[in-house]
Amino acid sequence: MQLFLAILLLAAMLATAFVLIKGLVNMAGTTQAELEDKSAGPTPRMLKSNKLMVRRIQFQAIAIAIIAIILLTLSAKGG
Image 1 (cartoon, rainbow, N blue to C red):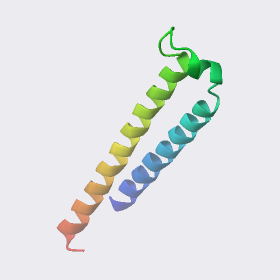
Image 2: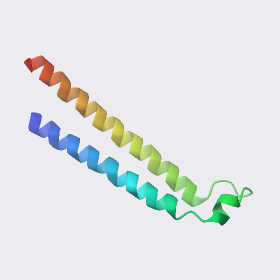
Image 3: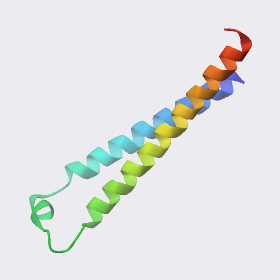
Image 4: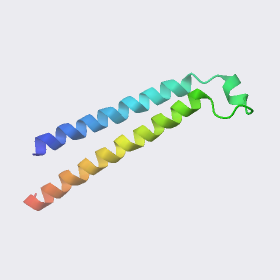
């Protein structure tokens, strides 16, 4: 059981890192024109960045939940 949870935790952590890097790459591609254009509302890049941020937070929440489950199972076993 612990091995399974450790593998799930690793997967959640890797997914978080992947989405974080993908979001950073997306943000790095933002042009000055996109930042200055206030008339058209959010650009597709901004919307994508927002979706990636939400996805990253979801993966982080999953990782934290797995850590909580691991800690609960370890404390129930007495160490």
